[in-house]
Image 1: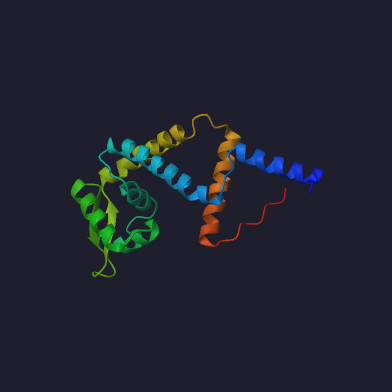
Image 2: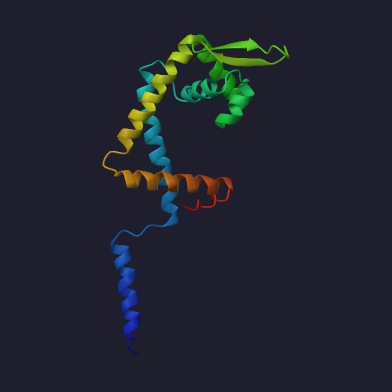
Length: 170
């Protein structure tokens, strides 16, 4: 039996795709996880200069936007368990970045507030984020960065089960 001309073209296309380094969906999670770890490592290195540890930057940035959150509210917003946040807040209080105060309306609630040291660290955190991002994006064009951000946001929406917003009409 002889092969048809169309069958040979299809075989060549398949072989060509494999030669060019075909990608499977199974490649996404490990690559994305590794890139996120590498970016977080670079950010942690930049934050260490200011005496901050991984995860503390998120607490400070949340409190700078919305002062006086409970440890439970912080945990929920940052996607960690409440006991983890309680330990983090305790450590940050010992370092002088935050202070715990009873809520004015409900004395049973404890709210977390930035100290002056904590407020001063906000700009340093933003610089560390910018420096780490610039390092990660070396060699990318502005268009590639826009595309990457668009794709990452779409991926995040998919994972949260949120539909994409309707495109704006011009």
